[in-house]
Length: 239
Image (tube, rainbow, N blue to C red; front, side, top):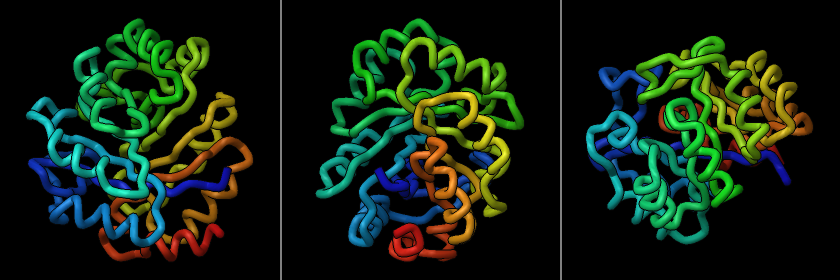
């Protein structure tokens, strides 16, 4: 499998937005998420990384928009945000998304997450959002435990994939945390998707060099919305 790109669509009140280091107070509005998604698809994207920020922060949800996104032709969606119990998990899977990423519940409800993995297998990924080595939960507002302890636990119970976000680089265009990713990849044999800090095409080249070590792909947000490069340009670099 080739290195995969995941254009990000973060949803707040039905709009596509970007946060700076996960802070709701530092939000930039980028308009209609359906139009953004269609542009990514038309440029050759095969996946979208969709985050329901309202659900993550407990301010409601964007279920209607997510449902419309999953109906777009030719795209797979991984969905994050507010998936913390059977009801929210089943609602997320019912949207038609390919898989869901579970974050806060991995810390707060590990037994429930283990049962979800047992039921749904590869449709469940663990979202590991970190500052330094500390895992962040509740929309990145709380800290809870060491990243490597968390990964070791979920390796043992059969997690098939991790999405690793360096919060301090998210939305900053300061480059990905290669050192962190190398450490994670040496700690687990499961596929890992990287997120946070990608700012130019050389970042993607550097990340793609880790593909043979288990880095499956990268989530790209601010770089696309700021015009640093396009999905088509990124795919050309990686081809």
